[in-house]
Image 1 (cartoon, rainbow, N blue to C red):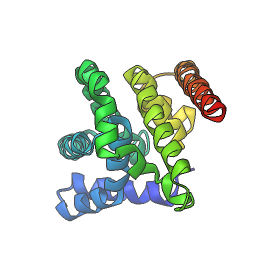
Image 2 (image 1 turned 135 degrees about the vertical axis):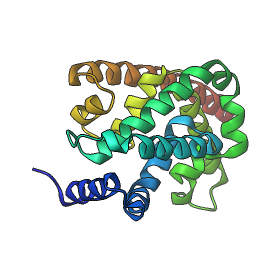
Image 3 (image 1 turned 180 degrees about the vertical axis):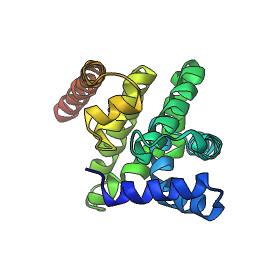
Length: 209
């Protein structure tokens, strides 16, 4: 059964297909933040996310006439933005892997997105340092994933989408998404286990001094 939001989107799409430019502006307003947020989470770069955001709505505008109402508009637009993100990651994978740490540390993009430190006591600088270290390590760990693994992980754990919906977005089966998500989770667990071991050794050495 279609939701009220889905029906509203479809009505706006019909209006756009009939030449109503104001309806397209309403569609953009309804989905712009989710598109920008997803692009940022996947690329970890505000500049790249803004570029993909612009390209997404340009492509949506050009292709909206071919929208056939076989899925929700939100699923369709997620398909557009994730495909653009995948193309971006594949083109820039080598460069991103070599510069991911510097981008994260200097830009604080991961911290600003998740607001991890905000929930911690302001008078506990050691805890804040640990949070920053963990965020930086998680961001580095994400660069170890393939572009497809990264997109699936973000859609599932940060966008909260069901596996079936992710399969529709990426035009593949739910079983394939499960396998990709499992691989991504295993890789991240391995990377984070390394951080835990390193941190444990550091704390033990500090206690012995």
